[in-house]
Length: 310
Image (cartoon, rainbow, N blue to C red; front, side, top):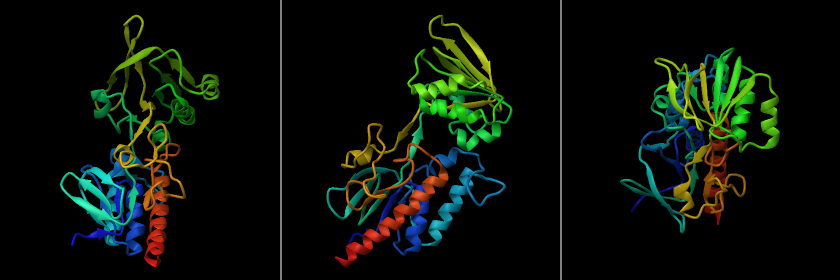
């Protein structure tokens, strides 16, 4: 008879791995479907200095490795496979990967969200070397340096305002003349003495050999190109939650695709829970994702106990 897991955790960032740790300690024996490139956004983060317990900081991939070992120590099983589909229409739930099909009494969705990048080759090459997408994670490393922020929405204004605490100057670079940002956020940025704007331009290249040194921009009207020197590059054009496969299975999401929790961490489908950046578009921190993973695992434990007593 095919094994039916008490819970399957989909995702292996801080939310998924913390859920696995708590579920393992509760003797739920979870299965974590980690993906082929496990670890979430922490794996593209070099120095993590704001995760409690590491006064000297820790490398993102090392933090993921430690979390994985800790979850495995308490009985979590890790499957390095990608989820291809899920069936939440009846119980046990079915989770299909590229090569297997698993069954579970409950599921925790912890697939995270992906940063939207411009897609330039050097943007990828210099990631972690002056190129980043999280001001609250990395702003500290750019003290007294010139910084560019790419974007025109509220998140770009928030990132820029936060970065004024550290940077010598912050330049917001936007491809249009008009901004999606709310009037109040735009005005705060415009009124800040450290913030300037370059608008109606396209970023055509990211400059730097061993580390980021600036951007090349093209004027959208004249076609003229010029370089803007900087030491920090923050992209703030949004995130894409990894929720498509769950939407197809009936999980409710908001207009941007973020999963909506209905009661605590439970979704609109009883027995399916959510944690981390796949639903959190506000904080997006490793520590908040880990906290939500803890909450989801505790909710799963309560749910399974109640079901066993019915």
